[in-house]
Image (cartoon, rainbow, N blue to C red; front, side, top):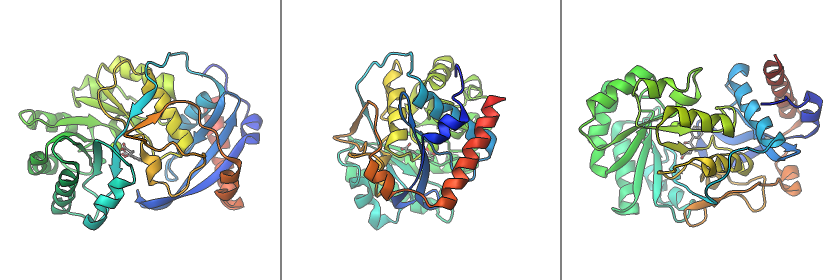
Length: 329
Ligand SMILES: O=C(O)CCC(=O)c1ccccc1C(=O)O
Ligand SMILES: [Mg+2]
């Protein structure tokens, strides 16, 4: 970032919201976010609650970048194809959850969830394939939960459902590389997510040949231009995804996706469908499998309706203040 906006200026533009989810995701049923009414447009700072300040400060860099300056890279497309995201819901909720996204040709299914078995995953993937038909695209996201052996076993059990790729099957770069060697005869690609966004070296995956493609998120990578530079250096195809952002954070993801030279896969930016309410009117929800690019503005009524209580607002102001100090160093 060129010049860091002054803390007082940032705090004067802050609104803290707590948005209800349609279905539990990552163990929570509300999503808290700071919205910033920046001079270049509305922006979002919403690192997950458990992240430490060092990790959260990249999210602040991205939020300030998006709210205080426009990307210098030109957009090369005006709408972004998106996938539906299916959390680990019970089997009888699969159809209703996918239908929240409207017409989507691609579904990303969360697998390897704590407390579940491979049989649960097989059942959820089979049901999704049945609903989508043979032309639909299915990808999985294990969030790093499998060992290499478990991942190999799971991929062999699930490949019959015709998988596009499996995202972060194992936790580490060497494990991803080993899995990729073991399944190279199977037509299932390996994507890296946490190994790109939760590390000091987002290019290590590409250097190690540990993934076929990268999942990239604008907020943890420090903003649109930084994420574009990482993709260019990695030389791998990229899928842009969200962090279960409000429509304002999703707009930042859409602006990133609009600037990638190639966009061979549908993006994980349809997640406004998992929010039971939203900060924008209308929300940035998928329409016919795509979302539009363009700035999204917070709706004053929604800001009032979704305002966090004074204790949570103070918590977020403190957190933002600490992250700002880290960026100013
Ligand atoms: O990519 C998608 O389809 C939606 C976004 C998503 O899955 C996600 C949302 C919040 C936190 C982590 C993740 C993830 O990709 O692991
Ligand atoms: Mg992921």
